[in-house]
Length: 99
Image (tube, rainbow, N blue to C red; front, top):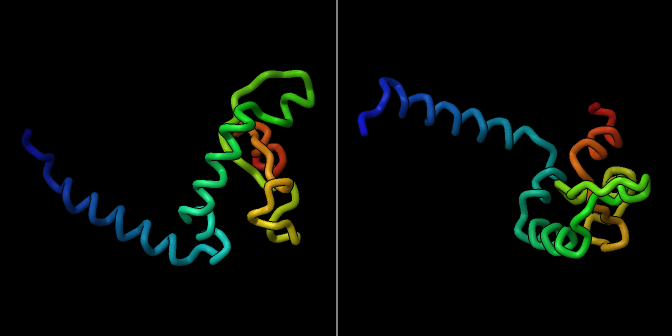
């Protein structure tokens, strides 16, 4: 299949931009890309597949991610099972004032 002109340049530029962006992020954010976090969050979501906040309100919604009840920045433990909760994206954004 023929390539579009400049396709390789654009892909290389995107990779370079992402690399610079990721280096500028706080070190704490890098933990969320670690294999340890991915494994823990996957295991937690297998045991809690529904959004826990929606469930408290009587709504059944699939969870999109695992969130810390007490933020790691506020002294919450990154790896403590009791500090985790499954949330849908809507509840996560509400919690973090993004929507």
